[in-house]
Image (tube, rainbow over all chains, first blue to last red; front, side, top):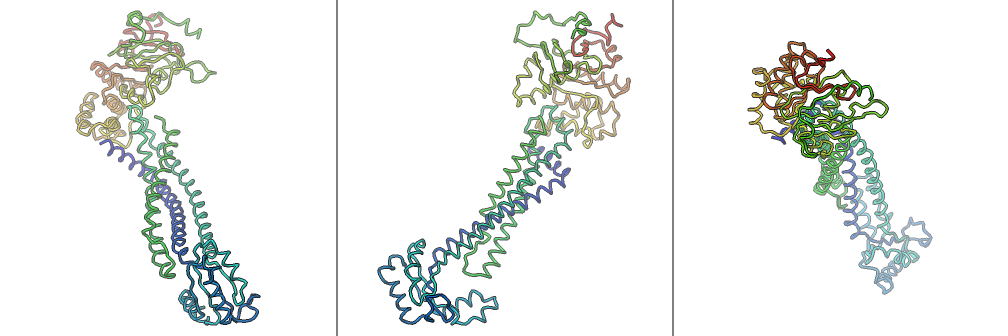
Length: 304
Length: 258
């Protein structure tokens, strides 16, 4: 009875104040979607780190016809130079750092290139002799890249030693920046949402001041008087959070999970399932913010 | 407050002061040297008021506008706290009640106003039922009690009317029904006949009298002299915040003054 009555009051308040409640829903929706996006980016970063750090290698690129570095002044790598690099990889100086290594010929490099860029017009124009052959070296400790660099970069026939982790770090830092931006936008939007909830509750309390006045007079408890307003704010924010959750999930499932994974297979993208972890967080943020701003507003504007 | 002091006529408390031991309060309402100052620069709304109302009494609180009647009522409801002195309602010092106990205090006090304060979008029945719903009363109890109380105030058969379809007198009856539906021990009426014509006012007085006969203490603030003169109940007159007369079975003016 009591609960049904409180809910009834809540929904009559929402009906009377519908346009404000809708705006709370939308602002909460947008702001939490940004929170969700930041969450997805972080998940994607973690996923890629886990996926790539195992696979990332140091690549020792050997000279080609088109190489321009000074170590390649003598033209493309010769068989003996290639052998020297391989010997050093197997020698006791380098071996403690090297977990394993593979040789990648120019034809293999072309194959991989064409696979990666199969949707791009570039794939057809590149030929095998434009791509360097390389040794793909997996390190025991990926942090030890510098040692390997020093050992190999000055060898004749070696064009460059590149740490692929560095490339990844760049991608990660881009993604991190994107998620920082998303969080910043989310924070601003959440401030809007909090203020909007406060205004909505104020208006709602004002438009129902007759009812609350009578409630006070006949001795209704503080809970009975304030709870409908609190619930009004929380329900509106929760509705926004549900929309944001659905959006976040849909982005993870369809955009990242289906479309991006289809575009770049083997990159290790997250999917809709990963987004489910974020949903309780979004709902919790919505409830806490709405409850907090409602309580503060009610304390000021609805005396009991 | 020299002016008020010179005007003070001999007051006659119904129960001699000596009969009471400090701290043992059996009165329905007791004001002990109560003063209320809203604003330091203006004169106090109430000044050193000491008065007691017994269980089952019917008391008129009379005086011109600004004499402190409304402050008197607000202090009992703890809408305000006294600046000094103590207000007891059913033996409880209302200023000392923790805020979460204030609703319970108000449940024991029904209030009626000059402007009725009905909910315009609710029927007569729903207006009265609202006072029970917000206290969490069960549906069965509401269904039983509301028609009974509407009967008490003389509104049988008007349950489904909306407030705007009723006359002023009928609206005030709804307000009274709402005030007593939770069976308070005290009914405070602040100018309940202020917006009503004399004939309708008499009808309202009959209702209040009936409620008083059933054992409810009624305190009515008014400046309707006809009603006070007709009812011949206890009259407490306030003037500029002080009690200038407390007379059992009095009229609006004292016999001396009139």
